[in-house]
Length: 410
Image 1 (cartoon, helix red, strand yellow):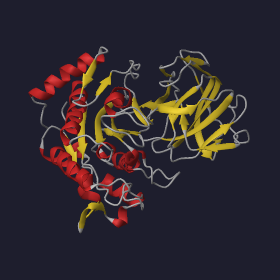
Image 2 (cartoon, helix red, strand yellow):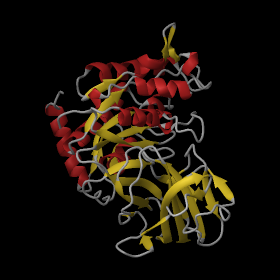
Image 3 (cartoon, one colour):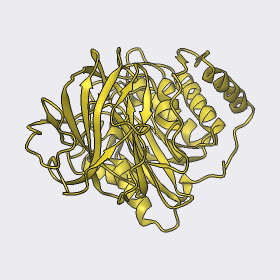
Image 4 (tube, one colour):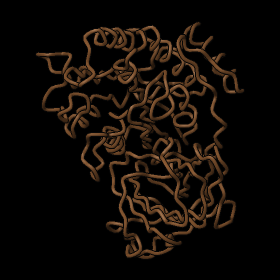
């Protein structure tokens, strides 16, 4: 694998400065270093994750029961709670983790109480992140867990992830976290709040891949409650491959996300440390970002975007994380499509394919485009909006990834 050259080493030095609180320019934008995220527990690997961003008005004196689908299995489950965008502290009165039976019901006897430095409750300050203590029971790979959180008190602003693409449950009044039955969970939502990662201690030398992207990675057009986002398909492939040491997969996609500018969430440059580099056991990230920058009005130049890619590469390499560059996919037919933007997409993809600055490349553009109309997605893979792949397209994307290419010698 190619090592970063002089320019990458310079950018790496700039990134190190940013970690101390400086602001680093990309050419047209800048990012401010995020508050420090607590280090992941040693020997842990992320088995599930979801990017946190501002998620509307906070609620309190209610219990969430979230359903998460694991990738890697192991022991010593811990959860990570985030109040990154809260305006006031959030107090969780109780937290429990169990095995989902069906709907909001938990398999009897599996609902274990989570603690935080030995206490049943924890207060997470505004902007803060905490890990729970470990639960000793074994977590199975590719299984549905329930994480029940009683929010005793909260401020005005919630932190969460609105596009879960999976049904979640709410007990609208009181603390029902310890209950295994579903009776109290009378409301359904499709968002995760406060919970942004779960980690386990798997077999030695296992690591994780972080899928870093926008709505395509988030699975916006995939079928709800079926785990058919492309990172889900990738997790199943990695689990089935006896040669791969990479078994954990974290989905860090956010709808509308951009590399350079903030939108519905902070830019990829701003959230890189928290959403990618802080994840337990991360060895590799697959970067699929750029389409929202390109189709914006006004949009950045290809050189602007390439400068952003180079920052992500340099900062990741400085932390020993491999970066796989994914080409930007076709989108002719989408309501914001412009021919002038297509030229930028082609320039960006040429850099991803030929620069040698990524540790490896996955050509999602080639995998899903229509050979007869290369600026369009093949109809068999198109959800119908000409931007987001359907379930079949998601599987094709996963299949385009060389599992060997996900490992490098950093």
